[in-house]
Structure formats: structure tokens, C-alpha cells
Amino acid sequence: MVVKSSHYFAHGNTAHGAHFLYTSAFEGLNKIFVLTGPQGTGKSTVIQSLADSLLDKGLHVQCFHSPLRPDELDGIILTELKVGIVDGRVCQGFSDSGADEIVFIHFEEAFDNSLVLPEHFITIEDLRGKLESAYSKAYETFAMALRIHDEWEKYYIENMDFSKADQITQDLIQELYAGHESDTPTASRHLFFGAATPRGAFDFIQSLTAQLERRIFIKGRAGSGKSTLLKKLASAAEQKGIEVQVFHCGFDPNSLDMLIFPKLRTAIFDSTAPHEYFPDRDGDEVLDMYTRTIAPGTDEAHAAEIAGIKARYSAKMKEATSHLAEAEAIDSQIKAYYVAATNFSIVEKLHLQLQSELNELISSIQLSK
Image (cartoon, rainbow, N blue to C red; front, side, top):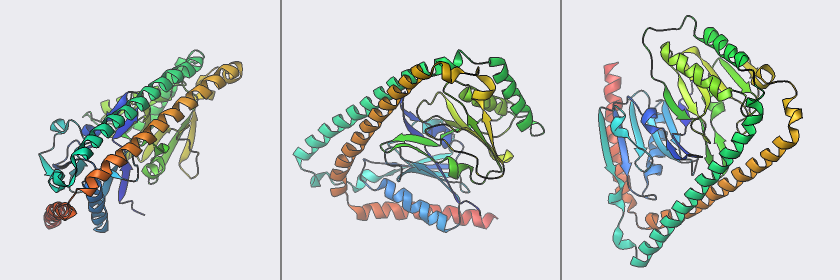
């Protein structure tokens, strides 16, 4: 079965605040359509409709989900056309994306100010302040959780055999890359496979790795070298000219959680909570960093301390998630005012305009074949 869609996040709610990877995710496209306008003016609905119509035509679509509402799309890339469409509220730095052309589609044209009462604008501004506060509380709480996580890691770092970890890395570099090197270094593509959402942690690991021949599940504890291993593998891949997709941790974007090597048909990823999976098919294997690099008995020697840290960490993650749920509820209230004052016949005209431009691009691609 050929998979016609790929699913990612390029915006995360993290311990370092809102973090965006759209510049890397959309790099090298021929054209990017940026949809401007407030929430509730039909942008996500149009993006989803365009994705569905393109999938119906048999084209491959890369779907970028919203971390606030993971069922909704913030952007898409039409792979064969090298065209991106994205909600302007979530993209940053596209002037550096290398796109030949960036086109702004103004969905605010569909919003009729006259349909919103003056007192409603005051309410909206008040809600925007509350929304910003809810996000700030979520990010502050995630940051506290990360500091607790650092305490957790310390026990394993202090009991780690770094020479063994380095040897594992070098062995993997040799095994994965031998015979695939190029004289031209490559630039990796940076993405998220998951995100912290109002529902908790959410990921697309299974769908992203479904068609790969080999999957390496890294097991271990916090601080057992999983992210460091992935960083070294990614750096070596870039130097050796091997294409790699680099997936950052949705909680701490300074850490890495997965690498996919499209041409090697291989993925290697941190398979621990909150994205814990187990081998279930041919080509799956486990790399256990705890048993291979951490002194035996570390878990048992520090069981009480680690249990206490884990409980504090889980409580903070739950609290941060509740703040995201509050943000979603407030955002929905704001959105309702804009939906009520949006002329959806204008939204449909903008939709048809985009669809027409994409159809022309599809036709030109087909004629050139």
C-alpha cells in the first residue's frame, strides 16, 4: 500500500515556550501560500478541504497539525508540486525559507467588523489577555517539569559508561552509513512527530514509520544517552551526505526523539513514555541504552528518590496540560465571535481561487511528464 499522506507538527507547546520549525519544514518549496486572518475565518477548514481534494487526485500531501487542536491542520505541503499552504498565525521566518514565491491570501477580507458589537471587541481583547496568560502558565509549568526531569536524569548520568555509549554510536554510524556516503554534505529537515496538546502527549510515530523496512526502538531511562546518540547520528549523516529527517522532542526541543533516513528506509527513535512502542513486525529491533551503558542496580539503588521525582514530574505535566486545555477553551470563545462575523461566501471564493491555482500547477506538472 502506498501512503499518500504524512503527518507532522511544526509548532510545539514546549518547556521553552512556543517553538516553530516551519522554516525548516517548508524549506526549498517553489511556492508558499500564507493564509492571513484571525481564528474562525475559515483557514483551517480550507486547508483541510484542499488536502482532501489533492489526496483524491492521488497526490501526496504532508499534513501539519495544530498542537492546540490536533484534529485540525495548520498547513500542508503538496509534495509533487513543491507547494506549501499555511496559516500565517503559526508560520515564522518564511522570508528565509528559500521559496521562489510567497503569496499572501487575506482571509480577513471575509470578516465583517460591523457584525461585532463594540462591547464584543472589548470582550475579545479581554479573552486574548486570558489566552496569553493560559499559554504562559503552561510554558512556565512545562519549564518546571523540565527542571524536575533534569533531577531524574542526574542519577543515570552519574552511573553511565560514556565510552560504551560512544562505541554504540560509532558502531551504528558504521552499520547504517557504510556504502551510502556522498561527497556533498546535506542539510537535515527539522520536524516534530508529536506535541503537547490539551489532550496530553500526541504523536504520529506509527504512521511516519509504517512504510519503513527497519525500525530501531531505543529504550532506556532519562539521562541514558538516547538524545545524545541521535544528535551524533544526525550530525554524522549530514557530514556524510545522507538524507535525514530530524524530529525534535515536543517537550524539550533542544533534545531529539527520532531520526528517519528515507533512502535507507530506516527510523531510530526514543521509544519511551510518553511515546512508548514495542517491536511488532519484521525489521523491528530494540537498542536498550540502560542495560548497555548504565551501571547495574542503578534503578534499585535510587528507587525511592526516583519514584518521588517521577511523581512530581507527572503532576507538573498534568498541570501544564490543564493550562493548555484552558487555552483551547478560551481560543474557542474568541473563535466563535469571528465565525459569527465571517462571510463564508467570501471564504469560499478564496478557497476556489486557491483550488484553481493548484489545479493549474497540477496540469502543468502532468503536461511536462
